[in-house]
Length: 153
Image (tube, rainbow, N blue to C red):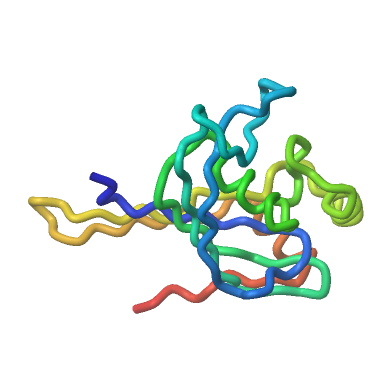
């Protein structure tokens, strides 16, 4: 029923314009490289929607919150690459600009974090679980000059 809300944090190359948008583009297995997914409009592709919002940005990178409305393989990675803002540290969906930025900041791993899960529990009511960012993610944010949003009380 898609009643579980899943949000991810992603550090991407460049600053998306507009700062908030919904990407609605079908995803399927790449026709030439079977290890990759691509935006395809074929009978084998499946609907996919991702909403992103910019939380902070520097001159050459941005921190995004990405909400999944569907759950396709590599969905966030493919969608952000499709708008020319690939995730830093991603060798599979990189562009020359994201590769340069990844090398510049000495990023050794994918800058994507499963951040928040929210759902309605019959026993507990509204449940929201937030996972702290891993150390490498926090170090990358600091190196780029980006900041996490403050928790709401």
